[in-house]
Length: 296
Image 1 (cartoon, rainbow, N blue to C red):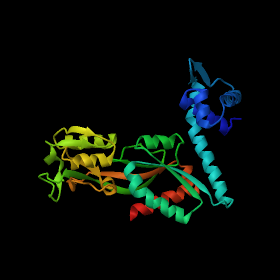
Image 2 (cartoon, rainbow, N blue to C red):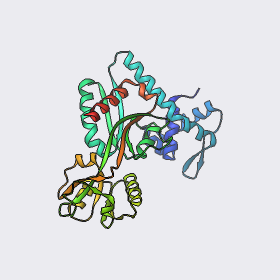
Image 3 (cartoon, rainbow, N blue to C red):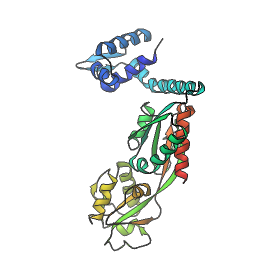
Image 4 (cartoon, one colour):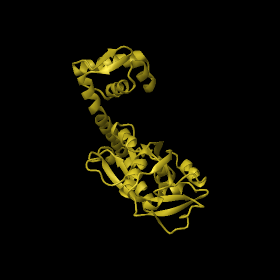
């Protein structure tokens, strides 16, 4: 019989590449990792790992087992949480991953409301942009991923539970002395000759696509994932940018003006989880609070 603890060890060895690194990640000794891997290979009836120099390489059987491990472990987590809720423990744990502007706008209000309503529920937060945040969810390293996308991509999230939260419009940022700073709105084409300051990789791709649709390629002089840095560069007169409205809300731009962009460029903000995890009470409550906060 394959045990969950053995699957966790196999996944750690696969991720880190060695028994010693896996032991450090799991907080145990290298002999304990080696012993559990031998027990797992005995249960599987075949070799799962091959030592190549200082690293361990998965066999075909090992790759297949690792591929199934995340779903199996997520299902076990769901079962444990449901049983705990039924038993009346009133406890839960949720691992949340969010992109930065979501962390500073949607997440604080949602988690404050969740704590007031369910004080026994613990929530941890780390930041990652999609698609990395979605990968963390599929790999079993978080329970909810706050993510976004520009336009629906067929099949992108078909294996996940998608909770729509809001539509976030992109806003133009111009230096205060810019010729269009006081305009009620600005078209992308009017900024064709400007220096551009680009944001995260996914937002950067969207910017290039939108500009190309307007007949020009943007001259990107600066690129940074840090939204306050984007606003600082614009405020210093070094270029123009478009940022999601959530990002503009989270940081007060100094020396920069926010101007609506026409035609409207929007991204869809969603909360994602795995089907098994959606039935976990603590996860479901967190999704509900995120939706309520987004609706305000």
